[in-house]
Length: 112
Image (tube, rainbow, N blue to C red; front, side):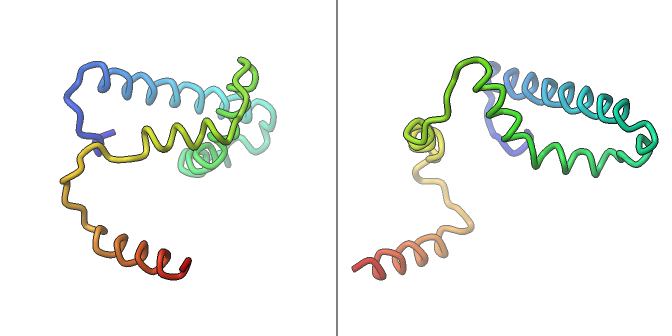
């Protein structure tokens, strides 16, 4: 969360709430897993659990969205990434910019 530079109170509050919700869900699932396998309970270490939860979070989110009636639509994903994936700071200097330009020019030259 410290990477996102926004001073807008609504954005900051949303990020904090999402982080808290993620933490609650993660811990509830961990507790359920420990109850399902009490003999392995001590082996569900925090770091291992965090890595596992992080890996499966997109699947959990897809199931939640499907449950509430939002279907996965590839076009919606493209529209979302076109709207949200582009940095609005056009003139920001980026460390990887020279390499991204080089790769993009190679890809474009290869398609000709």
